[in-house]
Length: 172
Image (cartoon, rainbow, N blue to C red):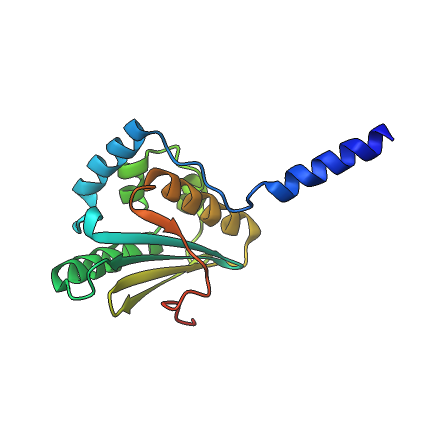
């Protein structure tokens, strides 16, 4: 009887726990990340939304202008994401490190990945841009997911978790 109670309790706890919940960083951390981010990201965080969608092969990072007619923000988004895509393909993750710190979850694994182990593709969207990360190496998929969770936590004011079936998603 006692084992049944414990098993039932654990099952209820598991069901009640959100699977994709990401703990928001404290207010001081959010302020620090936004300040450091303003020196790395050229677009206005208040005028954009970051979406991080985990996928079976990695993830999709999107930055979208809140105002679809704000061509200045859209161009800044595209310029930045295009540039970091090139850097990431070369294993250079110095910009996320400047914003989030060297101990950011998933970052060391991404930096250590060999050329070609992670496919990184930049695509323009009508209201911004996206970067698609894909790999078949489980350790690197996990690193991408951890990295996305850390970004969601640190950019909680300006980022949302996404759904990989998003209307902005373009098939590879």
